[in-house]
Amino acid sequence: MLRLTWVQPEDLLGHELRQAVQDGREPAAVAARWRAAGGPDAPARAGASPQRASRYLRLLAEDLLDELAELPSRLADAEPTDLGRIRSLCPDWPAPPARNHADPSYPGRLEAAWLGRAAGCLLGKPVEKLPLDGIRQLARATGNWPLTTWFTARGVPEDLAAKYPWNTRSAATSLAENIDGMPEDDDLNYALLNLLLLQRHGRGFTTTDVARLWLDELPAGRAFTAERVAYRNLLLGIDPPHTARHRNPFREWIGALIRADVHGWTNPGDPAAAAAQAHRDAALTHTANGVYAAMFAAAVIAAAAGGDKDVHGCLAAGLSVVPPGSRLARAVRQAIRLAAEHRDFETVVDELHATHSGTCHWVHAVPNTALIAAALTHADGDFTGSVCRVVSGGWDTDSCGATAGSVAALLAGSPAALPDRWTAPLKNRLATSVGDFNGTGFDALARLTHLEALRP
Image (cartoon, rainbow, N blue to C red; front, side, top):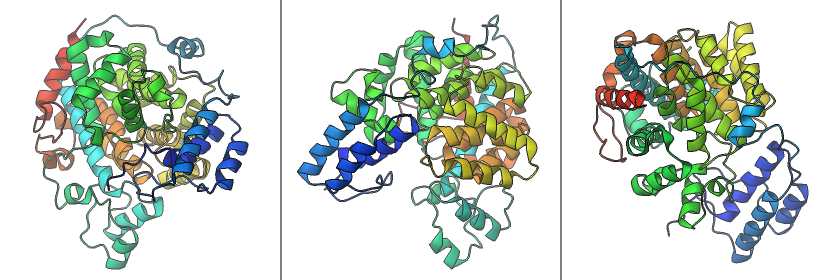
Protein backbone atom coordinates (compact mmCIF):
# COMPACT_ATOMS: atom_id res chain seq x y z
CA MET A 1 0.00 0.00 0.00
CA LEU A 2 1.38 3.40 -1.01
CA ARG A 3 1.61 5.74 1.94
CA LEU A 4 2.80 9.26 1.15
CA THR A 5 5.08 10.85 3.71
CA TRP A 6 5.07 14.49 4.83
CA VAL A 7 1.28 14.74 4.70
CA GLN A 8 -0.10 12.34 7.33
CA PRO A 9 -1.19 14.13 10.55
CA GLU A 10 0.62 11.69 12.84
CA ASP A 11 3.85 12.26 10.86
CA LEU A 12 3.46 16.03 10.96
CA LEU A 13 2.71 16.51 14.64
CA GLY A 14 6.21 15.82 15.93
CA HIS A 15 7.63 18.34 13.46
CA GLU A 16 4.99 20.90 14.48
CA LEU A 17 5.84 20.49 18.16
CA ARG A 18 9.47 21.21 17.32
CA GLN A 19 8.51 24.16 15.13
CA ALA A 20 6.36 25.59 17.92
CA VAL A 21 9.34 25.74 20.26
CA GLN A 22 11.41 27.49 17.59
CA ASP A 23 8.85 30.14 16.73
CA GLY A 24 8.04 31.17 20.28
CA ARG A 25 4.97 29.17 21.25
CA GLU A 26 4.50 26.97 24.34
CA PRO A 27 3.58 23.45 23.17
CA ALA A 28 4.37 21.48 26.34
CA ALA A 29 0.75 20.73 27.22
CA VAL A 30 -0.04 19.54 23.71
CA ALA A 31 3.09 17.40 23.65
CA ALA A 32 2.09 15.76 26.94
CA ARG A 33 -1.35 14.86 25.57
CA TRP A 34 0.24 13.37 22.46
CA ARG A 35 2.69 11.23 24.44
CA ALA A 36 -0.05 10.10 26.84
CA ALA A 37 -2.07 8.86 23.86
CA GLY A 38 0.88 6.82 22.62
CA GLY A 39 2.22 9.24 20.02
CA PRO A 40 5.96 9.12 19.28
CA ASP A 41 8.26 11.53 21.09
CA ALA A 42 10.30 12.38 18.00
CA PRO A 43 9.06 13.40 14.56
CA ALA A 44 9.29 10.83 11.83
CA ARG A 45 12.37 11.21 9.65
CA ALA A 46 11.44 13.01 6.42
CA GLY A 47 11.21 10.47 3.63
CA ALA A 48 10.80 7.52 5.99
CA SER A 49 7.82 5.18 5.88
CA PRO A 50 6.55 4.86 9.46
CA GLN A 51 3.87 2.42 10.50
CA ARG A 52 0.27 3.42 9.85
CA ALA A 53 -1.29 5.05 12.91
CA SER A 54 -4.56 3.98 14.45
CA ARG A 55 -7.65 5.96 13.47
CA TYR A 56 -7.79 7.44 16.98
CA LEU A 57 -4.18 8.60 16.90
CA ARG A 58 -4.63 10.16 13.47
CA LEU A 59 -7.75 12.07 14.55
CA LEU A 60 -6.02 13.25 17.69
CA ALA A 61 -3.03 14.42 15.64
CA GLU A 62 -5.35 16.47 13.43
CA ASP A 63 -6.93 18.12 16.46
CA LEU A 64 -3.58 18.83 18.08
CA LEU A 65 -2.13 20.31 14.88
CA ASP A 66 -5.03 22.75 14.78
CA GLU A 67 -4.67 23.51 18.48
CA LEU A 68 -0.95 24.24 18.06
CA ALA A 69 -1.73 26.63 15.23
CA GLU A 70 -3.84 28.72 17.59
CA LEU A 71 -1.13 29.17 20.22
CA PRO A 72 0.22 32.74 20.43
CA SER A 73 3.86 33.37 19.59
CA ARG A 74 6.15 35.70 21.52
CA LEU A 75 8.13 36.21 18.27
CA ALA A 76 5.19 37.34 16.15
CA ASP A 77 6.10 41.03 16.19
CA ALA A 78 9.79 40.47 15.39
CA GLU A 79 9.12 37.87 12.68
CA PRO A 80 6.13 38.86 10.53
CA THR A 81 5.32 37.29 7.17
CA ASP A 82 3.42 40.21 5.62
CA LEU A 83 5.69 42.09 3.20
CA GLY A 84 4.64 45.52 4.43
CA ARG A 85 5.49 44.63 8.01
CA ILE A 86 8.78 43.06 6.92
CA ARG A 87 9.75 46.28 5.14
CA SER A 88 8.82 48.35 8.18
CA LEU A 89 11.37 46.40 10.23
CA CYS A 90 14.20 46.79 7.69
CA PRO A 91 15.86 50.20 8.14
CA ASP A 92 18.21 49.64 5.20
CA TRP A 93 15.65 48.36 2.69
CA PRO A 94 17.36 49.02 -0.68
CA ALA A 95 16.14 51.78 -2.98
CA PRO A 96 15.19 50.85 -6.55
CA PRO A 97 17.94 51.58 -9.08
CA ALA A 98 17.57 52.90 -12.59
CA ARG A 99 16.69 49.76 -14.57
CA ASN A 100 19.30 48.92 -17.18
CA HIS A 101 19.54 45.46 -18.72
CA ALA A 102 21.57 46.52 -21.77
CA ASP A 103 24.78 44.93 -20.47
CA PRO A 104 25.85 42.71 -23.41
CA SER A 105 27.67 40.33 -21.04
CA TYR A 106 24.54 39.53 -19.04
CA PRO A 107 23.34 36.49 -21.06
CA GLY A 108 26.77 34.93 -20.51
CA ARG A 109 26.63 35.61 -16.79
CA LEU A 110 23.17 34.04 -16.67
CA GLU A 111 24.51 30.93 -18.37
CA ALA A 112 27.25 30.82 -15.76
CA ALA A 113 24.62 31.14 -13.03
CA TRP A 114 22.56 28.23 -14.40
CA LEU A 115 25.71 26.12 -14.71
CA GLY A 116 26.89 27.12 -11.24
CA ARG A 117 23.54 26.24 -9.72
CA ALA A 118 23.58 22.84 -11.41
CA ALA A 119 27.19 22.03 -10.53
CA GLY A 120 26.81 23.03 -6.88
CA CYS A 121 23.64 20.98 -6.59
CA LEU A 122 25.23 17.96 -8.23
CA LEU A 123 28.27 18.13 -5.95
CA GLY A 124 26.02 17.89 -2.90
CA LYS A 125 23.63 15.21 -4.14
CA PRO A 126 25.52 12.02 -3.18
CA VAL A 127 26.02 13.15 0.44
CA GLU A 128 22.58 14.63 1.08
CA LYS A 129 21.20 13.36 4.41
CA LEU A 130 24.62 12.11 5.56
CA PRO A 131 25.97 13.31 8.93
CA LEU A 132 28.84 15.76 8.92
CA ASP A 133 31.36 13.19 10.13
CA GLY A 134 30.35 10.83 7.34
CA ILE A 135 30.92 13.47 4.67
CA ARG A 136 34.37 14.19 6.08
CA GLN A 137 35.38 10.56 6.30
CA LEU A 138 34.21 9.69 2.79
CA ALA A 139 36.08 12.63 1.30
CA ARG A 140 39.25 11.95 3.29
CA ALA A 141 39.21 8.29 2.23
CA THR A 142 39.66 9.34 -1.40
CA GLY A 143 42.16 12.17 -0.80
CA ASN A 144 39.51 14.80 -1.47
CA TRP A 145 39.69 16.75 1.80
CA PRO A 146 39.44 19.66 2.06
CA LEU A 147 36.89 19.12 -0.68
CA THR A 148 38.05 20.33 -4.10
CA THR A 149 36.16 18.20 -6.63
CA TRP A 150 33.36 15.65 -7.12
CA PHE A 151 32.85 12.83 -4.64
CA THR A 152 33.83 9.34 -5.79
CA ALA A 153 33.18 5.84 -4.50
CA ARG A 154 36.50 4.64 -5.91
CA GLY A 155 38.88 3.87 -3.08
CA VAL A 156 36.30 4.12 -0.27
CA PRO A 157 36.79 1.17 2.14
CA GLU A 158 33.85 -1.23 2.27
CA ASP A 159 33.27 -0.75 5.99
CA LEU A 160 33.16 3.04 5.60
CA ALA A 161 30.77 2.79 2.64
CA ALA A 162 28.52 0.54 4.71
CA LYS A 163 28.58 2.92 7.67
CA TYR A 164 27.91 6.01 5.55
CA PRO A 165 26.10 4.92 2.37
CA TRP A 166 25.74 7.46 -0.40
CA ASN A 167 22.32 8.98 -1.00
CA THR A 168 20.55 6.04 -2.64
CA ARG A 169 18.59 8.03 -5.21
CA SER A 170 21.52 10.20 -6.26
CA ALA A 171 24.63 8.03 -6.18
CA ALA A 172 23.95 6.52 -9.61
CA THR A 173 24.12 9.93 -11.31
CA SER A 174 26.21 12.23 -9.11
CA LEU A 175 29.56 10.58 -8.39
CA ALA A 176 32.60 11.50 -10.47
CA GLU A 177 32.55 8.14 -12.23
CA ASN A 178 28.96 8.31 -13.45
CA ILE A 179 27.97 11.97 -14.04
CA ASP A 180 26.42 12.24 -17.50
CA GLY A 181 24.60 15.56 -17.73
CA MET A 182 22.55 17.17 -14.98
CA PRO A 183 20.02 14.70 -13.52
CA GLU A 184 16.60 15.84 -12.38
CA ASP A 185 16.51 17.61 -9.02
CA ASP A 186 13.94 19.80 -7.30
CA ASP A 187 16.59 22.52 -6.91
CA LEU A 188 16.54 22.94 -10.69
CA ASN A 189 12.87 22.06 -11.22
CA TYR A 190 11.76 25.10 -9.25
CA ALA A 191 14.01 27.40 -11.26
CA LEU A 192 12.30 26.08 -14.39
CA LEU A 193 8.86 26.54 -12.84
CA ASN A 194 9.64 30.15 -12.00
CA LEU A 195 10.88 30.74 -15.52
CA LEU A 196 7.51 29.44 -16.74
CA LEU A 197 5.79 31.63 -14.15
CA LEU A 198 7.38 34.79 -15.54
CA GLN A 199 6.77 33.77 -19.14
CA ARG A 200 3.05 33.36 -18.45
CA HIS A 201 2.35 36.08 -15.90
CA GLY A 202 5.26 38.51 -15.94
CA ARG A 203 6.85 40.01 -12.87
CA GLY A 204 3.43 41.08 -11.59
CA PHE A 205 2.45 37.48 -10.86
CA THR A 206 0.46 36.68 -7.72
CA THR A 207 0.81 33.86 -5.23
CA THR A 208 -2.36 32.38 -6.72
CA ASP A 209 -0.63 32.34 -10.12
CA VAL A 210 2.17 30.30 -8.55
CA ALA A 211 -0.39 27.84 -7.15
CA ARG A 212 -2.15 27.40 -10.49
CA LEU A 213 1.15 26.85 -12.28
CA TRP A 214 2.14 24.16 -9.81
CA LEU A 215 -1.12 22.31 -10.29
CA ASP A 216 -0.62 22.47 -14.05
CA GLU A 217 3.10 21.76 -14.33
CA LEU A 218 4.58 20.28 -11.14
CA PRO A 219 4.15 16.52 -10.67
CA ALA A 220 2.98 16.02 -7.09
CA GLY A 221 5.62 13.36 -6.50
CA ARG A 222 8.35 15.94 -7.23
CA ALA A 223 7.27 18.15 -4.30
CA PHE A 224 8.60 17.55 -0.78
CA THR A 225 8.09 18.80 2.79
CA ALA A 226 6.49 22.28 2.79
CA GLU A 227 5.79 22.14 -0.94
CA ARG A 228 4.06 18.78 -0.69
CA VAL A 229 1.88 19.94 2.21
CA ALA A 230 0.94 23.14 0.39
CA TYR A 231 0.17 21.13 -2.76
CA ARG A 232 -2.08 18.87 -0.66
CA ASN A 233 -3.75 21.93 0.81
CA LEU A 234 -4.48 23.31 -2.64
CA LEU A 235 -6.17 20.06 -3.59
CA LEU A 236 -8.25 20.34 -0.42
CA GLY A 237 -9.51 23.73 -1.59
CA ILE A 238 -7.39 25.84 0.77
CA ASP A 239 -6.29 29.14 -0.80
CA PRO A 240 -2.92 30.87 -0.50
CA PRO A 241 -1.47 32.07 1.82
CA HIS A 242 -3.31 29.71 4.17
CA THR A 243 -1.66 26.86 2.24
CA ALA A 244 1.56 27.78 4.02
CA ARG A 245 0.10 27.49 7.52
CA HIS A 246 -2.51 24.74 7.48
CA ARG A 247 -0.91 21.69 9.08
CA ASN A 248 2.41 22.61 7.53
CA PRO A 249 5.22 22.26 10.08
CA PHE A 250 7.84 22.64 7.33
CA ARG A 251 6.98 26.28 6.62
CA GLU A 252 10.36 27.52 7.86
CA TRP A 253 12.40 24.92 6.01
CA ILE A 254 14.57 25.54 2.95
CA GLY A 255 12.01 24.99 0.16
CA ALA A 256 11.29 28.64 -0.61
CA LEU A 257 15.00 29.51 -0.70
CA ILE A 258 15.66 26.96 -3.46
CA ARG A 259 13.04 28.70 -5.60
CA ALA A 260 14.60 32.16 -5.34
CA ASP A 261 17.26 32.27 -8.05
CA VAL A 262 15.10 33.30 -11.00
CA HIS A 263 13.75 36.22 -8.99
CA GLY A 264 17.29 37.47 -8.49
CA TRP A 265 18.39 36.72 -12.05
CA THR A 266 15.52 38.71 -13.54
CA ASN A 267 16.05 41.75 -11.29
CA PRO A 268 19.78 42.45 -11.78
CA GLY A 269 20.94 45.26 -9.52
CA ASP A 270 17.54 45.52 -7.78
CA PRO A 271 17.62 43.48 -4.54
CA ALA A 272 14.36 45.01 -3.29
CA ALA A 273 12.38 43.99 -6.38
CA ALA A 274 13.94 40.52 -6.30
CA ALA A 275 13.03 40.11 -2.63
CA ALA A 276 9.44 41.25 -3.17
CA GLN A 277 9.09 38.85 -6.08
CA ALA A 278 10.52 36.00 -4.00
CA HIS A 279 8.10 36.89 -1.20
CA ARG A 280 5.06 36.38 -3.45
CA ASP A 281 6.42 33.00 -4.50
CA ALA A 282 7.40 31.89 -0.99
CA ALA A 283 4.05 32.86 0.57
CA LEU A 284 2.43 29.81 -1.04
CA THR A 285 4.39 27.44 1.18
CA HIS A 286 6.32 29.29 3.88
CA THR A 287 6.12 31.85 6.65
CA ALA A 288 8.55 34.07 8.59
CA ASN A 289 12.11 32.72 8.40
CA GLY A 290 11.24 30.39 5.54
CA VAL A 291 10.15 33.44 3.57
CA TYR A 292 13.12 35.52 4.73
CA ALA A 293 15.53 32.87 3.43
CA ALA A 294 14.03 33.20 -0.05
CA MET A 295 14.11 36.99 0.10
CA PHE A 296 17.71 36.93 1.32
CA ALA A 297 18.85 34.62 -1.48
CA ALA A 298 16.99 36.58 -4.15
CA ALA A 299 18.50 39.87 -2.98
CA VAL A 300 22.04 38.44 -2.81
CA ILE A 301 21.66 37.04 -6.32
CA ALA A 302 20.17 40.28 -7.66
CA ALA A 303 23.13 42.23 -6.31
CA ALA A 304 25.58 39.81 -7.92
CA ALA A 305 23.56 39.80 -11.14
CA GLY A 306 23.75 43.58 -11.25
CA GLY A 307 27.52 43.47 -11.48
CA ASP A 308 28.54 43.75 -7.82
CA LYS A 309 31.76 41.72 -7.69
CA ASP A 310 32.12 41.97 -3.92
CA VAL A 311 30.44 38.96 -2.35
CA HIS A 312 30.43 40.70 1.02
CA GLY A 313 28.43 43.59 -0.42
CA CYS A 314 26.03 41.11 -2.00
CA LEU A 315 25.48 39.39 1.36
CA ALA A 316 24.86 42.79 2.96
CA ALA A 317 22.21 43.42 0.31
CA GLY A 318 20.60 40.14 1.31
CA LEU A 319 20.54 41.09 4.98
CA SER A 320 18.98 44.45 4.14
CA VAL A 321 15.67 42.76 3.21
CA VAL A 322 15.47 40.56 6.34
CA PRO A 323 14.12 41.80 9.69
CA PRO A 324 17.30 42.32 11.73
CA GLY A 325 15.83 40.85 14.92
CA SER A 326 14.75 37.60 13.23
CA ARG A 327 16.36 34.25 13.89
CA LEU A 328 17.56 34.08 10.29
CA ALA A 329 19.27 37.48 10.37
CA ARG A 330 21.00 36.66 13.64
CA ALA A 331 22.19 33.31 12.30
CA VAL A 332 23.53 34.83 9.08
CA ARG A 333 25.37 37.58 10.97
CA GLN A 334 26.93 34.99 13.26
CA ALA A 335 27.99 32.87 10.28
CA ILE A 336 29.59 35.80 8.48
CA ARG A 337 31.44 36.77 11.66
CA LEU A 338 32.72 33.23 12.21
CA ALA A 339 33.87 32.97 8.60
CA ALA A 340 35.79 36.22 8.94
CA GLU A 341 37.40 35.15 12.24
CA HIS A 342 38.62 31.62 11.43
CA ARG A 343 41.02 30.58 8.69
CA ASP A 344 39.99 26.93 9.02
CA PHE A 345 36.50 26.41 7.61
CA GLU A 346 36.04 23.21 9.60
CA THR A 347 36.09 25.36 12.74
CA VAL A 348 33.37 27.58 11.27
CA VAL A 349 31.24 24.54 10.43
CA ASP A 350 31.72 23.00 13.85
CA GLU A 351 30.59 26.26 15.49
CA LEU A 352 27.50 26.43 13.28
CA HIS A 353 26.58 22.83 14.01
CA ALA A 354 27.07 23.39 17.74
CA THR A 355 24.65 26.32 17.52
CA HIS A 356 21.94 24.83 15.32
CA SER A 357 22.02 21.05 15.07
CA GLY A 358 20.38 20.48 18.46
CA THR A 359 17.42 22.70 17.68
CA CYS A 360 16.86 22.75 13.92
CA HIS A 361 16.12 19.98 11.44
CA TRP A 362 18.83 19.56 8.80
CA VAL A 363 16.48 21.00 6.14
CA HIS A 364 15.53 24.09 8.18
CA ALA A 365 16.15 27.43 6.46
CA VAL A 366 17.97 29.10 9.36
CA PRO A 367 21.11 26.92 9.62
CA ASN A 368 21.31 26.29 5.88
CA THR A 369 21.12 29.97 4.98
CA ALA A 370 23.77 30.69 7.60
CA LEU A 371 26.03 28.01 6.10
CA ILE A 372 25.62 29.48 2.61
CA ALA A 373 26.62 32.91 3.90
CA ALA A 374 29.59 31.47 5.78
CA ALA A 375 30.88 29.57 2.74
CA LEU A 376 30.58 32.54 0.39
CA THR A 377 32.29 34.78 2.94
CA HIS A 378 35.12 32.37 3.71
CA ALA A 379 35.82 31.67 0.02
CA ASP A 380 35.58 35.38 -0.83
CA GLY A 381 33.10 34.43 -3.56
CA ASP A 382 35.45 32.07 -5.42
CA PHE A 383 33.37 29.43 -7.23
CA THR A 384 35.21 26.23 -6.30
CA GLY A 385 35.85 27.46 -2.77
CA SER A 386 32.21 28.42 -2.25
CA VAL A 387 30.54 25.23 -3.47
CA CYS A 388 33.10 22.94 -1.84
CA ARG A 389 32.94 24.72 1.50
CA VAL A 390 29.16 24.77 1.65
CA VAL A 391 28.77 21.10 0.69
CA SER A 392 31.49 20.10 3.15
CA GLY A 393 29.42 21.77 5.86
CA GLY A 394 26.64 19.18 5.68
CA TRP A 395 22.90 19.71 6.26
CA ASP A 396 21.01 20.18 2.97
CA THR A 397 24.08 19.73 0.82
CA ASP A 398 22.58 19.83 -2.68
CA SER A 399 20.33 22.83 -2.02
CA CYS A 400 23.09 24.85 -0.36
CA GLY A 401 25.51 23.90 -3.11
CA ALA A 402 23.05 25.10 -5.71
CA THR A 403 22.49 28.54 -4.16
CA ALA A 404 26.17 29.13 -3.39
CA GLY A 405 27.01 28.01 -6.91
CA SER A 406 24.55 30.44 -8.45
CA VAL A 407 25.97 33.39 -6.53
CA ALA A 408 29.63 32.51 -7.06
CA ALA A 409 29.13 31.83 -10.78
CA LEU A 410 27.57 35.27 -11.26
CA LEU A 411 30.59 36.76 -9.53
CA ALA A 412 32.87 34.73 -11.83
CA GLY A 413 31.16 36.42 -14.76
CA SER A 414 31.01 33.86 -17.57
CA PRO A 415 30.90 30.11 -18.27
CA ALA A 416 34.53 30.26 -19.35
CA ALA A 417 35.50 31.55 -15.91
CA LEU A 418 34.19 28.37 -14.25
CA PRO A 419 36.67 25.48 -14.01
CA ASP A 420 36.06 22.89 -16.72
CA ARG A 421 35.89 20.05 -14.20
CA TRP A 422 32.60 21.51 -12.96
CA THR A 423 30.94 22.35 -16.29
CA ALA A 424 32.12 19.66 -18.73
CA PRO A 425 30.36 16.72 -17.00
CA LEU A 426 27.04 18.63 -17.21
CA LYS A 427 27.22 18.30 -21.03
CA ASN A 428 24.93 21.32 -21.41
CA ARG A 429 21.96 19.08 -20.69
CA LEU A 430 19.34 19.22 -17.92
CA ALA A 431 16.89 16.42 -17.09
CA THR A 432 13.51 17.43 -15.70
CA SER A 433 9.84 16.50 -15.59
CA VAL A 434 8.78 20.18 -15.71
CA GLY A 435 7.14 21.50 -18.85
CA ASP A 436 9.00 20.93 -22.11
CA PHE A 437 12.41 21.62 -20.61
CA ASN A 438 13.76 18.07 -20.47
CA GLY A 439 17.13 17.94 -22.21
CA THR A 440 17.37 21.72 -22.56
CA GLY A 441 20.84 23.28 -22.55
CA PHE A 442 21.95 25.83 -20.02
CA ASP A 443 22.79 28.27 -22.81
CA ALA A 444 19.16 28.12 -24.00
CA LEU A 445 17.88 28.58 -20.44
CA ALA A 446 20.10 31.64 -20.06
CA ARG A 447 18.62 33.20 -23.21
CA LEU A 448 15.07 32.57 -21.97
CA THR A 449 15.91 34.01 -18.55
CA HIS A 450 17.45 37.09 -20.17
CA LEU A 451 14.24 37.73 -22.09
CA GLU A 452 12.34 37.82 -18.78
CA ALA A 453 14.95 40.15 -17.26
CA LEU A 454 14.35 42.53 -20.19
CA ARG A 455 10.59 42.69 -19.60
CA PRO A 456 9.37 46.02 -18.17
